[in-house]
Image 1: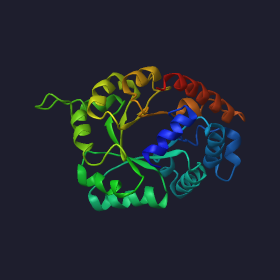
Image 2: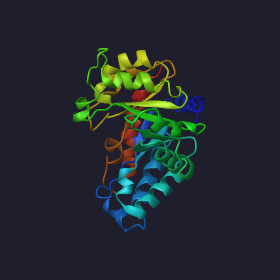
Image 3: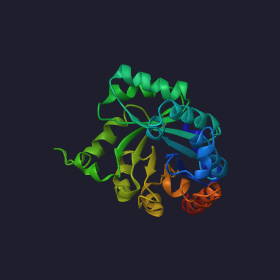
Length: 268
């Protein structure tokens, strides 16, 4: 999916919601455990209930890798089931020497047909470039994350008085363009978006952390939205685990709808 198509979907649905399918088999409703593939059954119902409310789904690969071969099968079935007009994110946080990154890119872009993959920029340009060789595919680079330990490195100030994450954004933005690179900025760091937008005014930013993690949607929009929206705001647990009974999918829809309706009021 290219940038124009993504913007079109945002405008059509009046939503910039990304739903995280970080599906933990220990948390899904008991009645699904008797299905042949409980994780896929759960994901399928969530997608059916929310696909008109969101513009993206983010699948955290760790939740599938941990299940071995069966987990990978659940991942493959899920990505094939998601409608083609919805942006898909492999939250894999890859990044390695060029040859290895080339294989990672082939895995997620060719074999699985994800639209994007999250990548760590720590090893520099040659670890990211193989992902940028694919047409209409996106790299989502980790920039400023919301976890407690993020300050250990991301906030280190260099000789130029810039924090490390700002330099990462500034340098890496030149590896590609706003048509194939996005950035991860945690919702709990919303005010940092003011300075980040000065560096990358036109790039999309993936913002996890609203809902369970405590991020505020209106603050994210206030500080991070540009004239094209430029945001994908992710919510995972607070949507997909809204209910634990046979009506879990309806409960998930209700939670997603509440966020989507707020987004309608925030769009430019």
